[in-house]
Length: 467
Figure 1 (cartoon, rainbow, N blue to C red):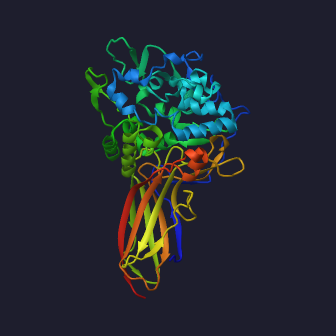
Figure 2: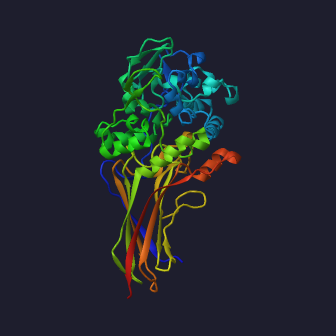
């Protein structure tokens, strides 16, 4: 069924480069990795003393006065940052293989309350109180009084580089709070900045300085940053609102109620949806999973360029272009070593016979040789592939598409001499948040198969003549 073919990768774009292959190893660092008062994570309290677990309010308590925010937040990956079963399995593997210090490093962002109180890594997960398992909830974010990344060891926001100050004062980007019995407020401008998000969504391997998650750097180098669009302008908006921001390259100002009976004022939504269409499985968030799928389907565009006519028995050349039209960072992003983004290309003759199908993913969910694929493969110090943060030193392969950029792949295929036209050329851009092989290795018997989302499609016809 298969005929001679080849795929030539021609990477093009503007803004951020669309591909990186064989990234250099991590920079040389001091003998001892940088630490904060609570270990490898840079999270801290105002006085560097342990926090009080009882002063982290439950999200439901906040929801009494802020029902809209509670409804939006419930089912989010933020609230499930500690209980997400995929993270839990990987975190426990980290504790077992790399030790409690590395486990606590991960928990600095996944369970700030647990780390600041010393409950993590001191206690095993079943022994933790509910407040230590509450993830990134209201009181975690709104007790952040300062960002410390640019003055810290990495000179950039990363690895939970913020200060949490417990008390009756809650911080936000709107400090004018009416007097009430629950709390007062103080304005912090960074609540409207990408640097707040980057404090956890930039991950630097603490032992060697290798940048594992680079979403902030991708944004900073792209057009969204230059237009003043922050993370919050997309991820604290609905799908439709975020799409409008991407189309116009202008932030939206929304007004509404922050408190049930309060006056209208500028608001942000609290869904915090990205591209995790498995939020229903991992966080119980059916709405969030649906929103993530909708975001994915609006993030990219697929285009096929081919000649109007071809000759049976001769070579057909098809250009496959993938455009990042709506993401303010690269696609895929974040833990790119887990992400899978690929193009499925098929050519059929007039009778519907399959003449050609490009290499896609293998049975384990990994790209085959010659696949049109995007993502990354991380490597350890010996150059062997790994998905374990504590082993990573470099990317062995990485290919992503920057904001408002595109990637072009040229497929060359020799048509059979007896092919009948017209030919139908079809392509699908598919996304999976993690390789099934890796999920199975991490979770064992509890593993699930991440959803495959069709992000975009393209179709064209080619007339055919004989030799």
